[in-house]
Image (cartoon, rainbow, N blue to C red):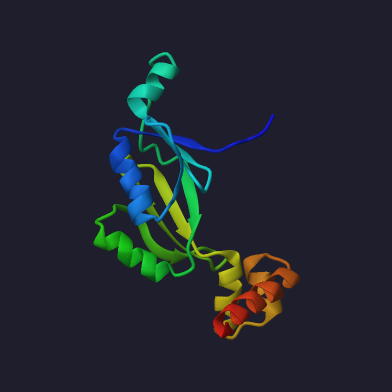
Length: 160
């Protein structure tokens, strides 16, 4: 057995596709009309069609029990884009206990979307804030080798 991707149901496929493509910059991998799969390997499926596939069992949206997770290193920038598009926030940008900056929003069907900076970028940001590799490793809970390679990666990208 092979796991493929999460699938969420949506009430309006066009509106949701516009949200994921236009606001979250996702690229469509397959468009099957009532089912759209994005390159990040998640899919949206028209709720009215999906309901038929599961013998018309009820579908409840907005249960706050599931989220899709994305990474974007400039959290302040994405928050601005979300606000400009009047996206509903679960909460504003904040640091998690392990120091990663994240924001959580709702998609048009009240599914939770989390957008967090990558752990690689977090290592780089904390290094720029003056923390040592060991302090970052202990604070975030990731190996020192990962911290060092992450910092090197971002420093090299800034000089290229």
